Image 1 (cartoon, helix red, strand yellow):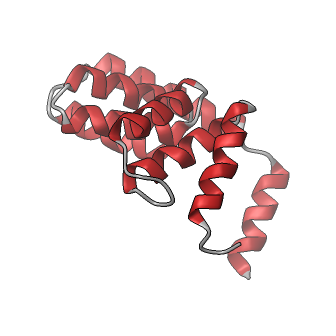
Image 2 (cartoon, helix red, strand yellow; image 1 turned 90 degrees about the horizontal axis):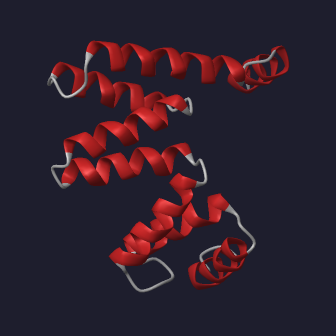
Length: 138
């Protein structure tokens, strides 16, 4: 039901129990914002970490941002590299900034860029391109 955030939190909690990585990510946001649940930074980070460990690219990117806000540059870069390796475009943009700041070597940046490119290419197909073209023309 639209606007039933408490119900959504219960649903995502059940889905987490079944191993749903995206549910971890959704609960993370709910605990971060206090939507449908009481705001809880510990639970926010727990669910964000679980989603990232499970391979959720945006969760991995967001963990990098959390580390960046805390001033932990080395951990920030590691999270952004992993997100880039998963094909997450924004992570490449963040790594460009870290490279410009001298926080990542040219070699490591180039490796992340190649891995990002490979991940994006692995998800490309004529069917997906046709579907994307149709959605743009609507």
